[in-house]
Amino acid sequence: MSTYPDAPGHRNVETSIAAADALAPKLGRLQRMAEGAIRDAGAHGLTADELAARLDMDRWSIQPRTSELKRKGLIRDSGQRRPNCTGKLAIVWIAA
Image: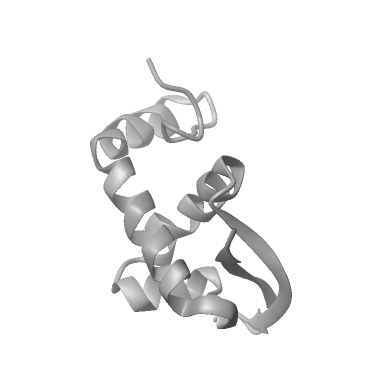
């Protein structure tokens, strides 16, 4: 059995475990899509909101992939910040 970041994380509650189990078969594809989009953005990078928009996906489905990719060493915090949909500053991710 895989562990985070090669398997979706959960909060050890029934609903969270069920959501992680449902996502598991798609995780590799979603991580590859996210990494590719961030890599394609170059030095400009992408926030989680920008990444979701670029992939035409829900932010809640794609944002956790940034934590997984960071843990794997495939992306990193650029040091840049841009406003997200709430107006708060968000990390801009770039390829490692």
